[in-house]
Length: 478
Image (cartoon, rainbow, N blue to C red; front, side, top):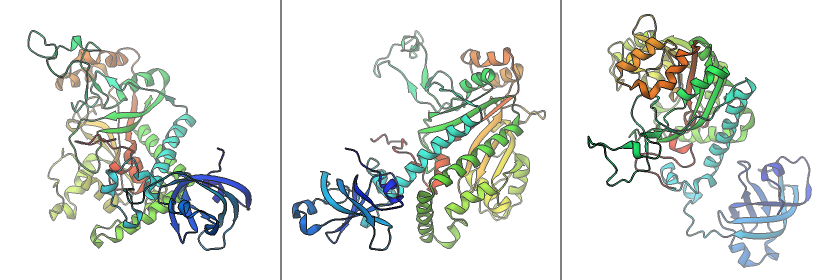
């Protein structure tokens, strides 16, 4: 069963006798030239079949996506387009693929919408193979960065009784029957009889639990699945996604911004060095896609250019107040070109505003900080002005917000007051408040939606195309 990866064969420096390769047929032309891919690399390897000495029945089975095993000699290619090819000595079809039934016909260039309906097969296309290899390398880079910098990896609970964001958009976890659940004397569901003895949900963030560990281990990070029952059927939202959340004791907001910028640049540089072929393919794919758009809607930069742009530019740090002033006096706002006009301080910025700041005004990645307290979560540190908090968002070209973070409120009395104002039951967060009772200190952290990062690095425009099996409203297929 031993065989050599296509990637290793293509990277060979010399011909090799008696190699075995296993993979899936991409194309078979002229009854002779077989293109095989095994997922290890975006490029196919060409195998030259001796069709005169191969049974006709076998040749007919060499259809797109059929699984094959080939033995032969790796030789220098006689044709253009590849350095090496395999002269086939033995050919075996391991698994047939009916050409009439196979749903992904590459010659017809299936749409991304169609491929989402075939999520179990779409990874066999070049684009999705490239995206998933990039996603894998990015995932490794996340761990590599934090491990190299002395962070402790913490696995926070997926089932939780707290709502870290205070938004209430959570999936309930229960073992109670859907019909006729036990009720209290008041007629409400009696969660004391539930599995955990209380109301529980799927986590929206591991931040609160990670904070408690940062206050003992110094610097920690979580990287795991999170869930939002937000009925947003958009190209930027998922109901299930992965979050990267570092928390660092003794870091203020400035140190938090430094950490986020350094982290992002590290993982982008890492993937550019290790996924050059995949990114080159995705860069060309994006360029072809851009050509189909009207001139006014085209991006000013290609994918590789955009990634280099982030690496080469210091992130511009701008207060929310300064950003509002810029947006209020901007041409799109004055000419009513923004869908959401900026009229006063306190407005919640939309993607169009964030992209204007990054792409048009500053022409660099932007970190906005000191947001109005009313539009941010309860755990963010209140500034001395009493109306803003030590929050920060990182904005990227083509995508808008990619990171959200803050210096956390370390003062017990202020935190208790904010919790009370929001109507949150203090008893639910007794453990969180303990970290402010016993050895409190300045600390900070941020959250980065991993799929947003993959979206930016691959140049895709819909978040459903950068996770293997997207979970969205009315869709839990596969």
